[in-house]
Length: 136
Image (cartoon, rainbow, N blue to C red):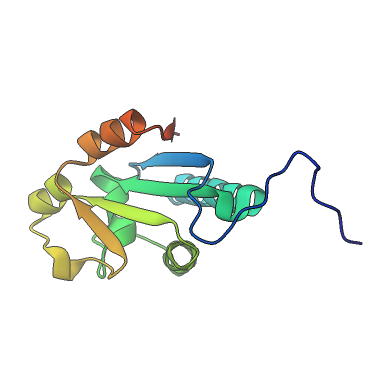
């Protein structure tokens, strides 16, 4: 059974900026934590579709989800979910400071990972730009 769109909902056209902007802090290597955050990201995409822009800022131990060869355990399911979410428009930002501490360069990261100089400043600047902030 199909549901009609709410009368209050405006038509959206391709290229229209989203009404909602959300940034997640991703800073732990724990698999249960990773699954919970990524499930939340997916739930927000399902709820808002193309009317949301989501950024996940990976810092510290959380950075390993974006590495081609992580040095901490990252399950295949998590790796696939991160890749899939990136294909749905979720941006993943890698903390350059953490990369430097690990001796990693851009070539060590997944091709969809955007590299920012300082993950904490990225979180701050996105909030200043109107992104709602979620941390676990």
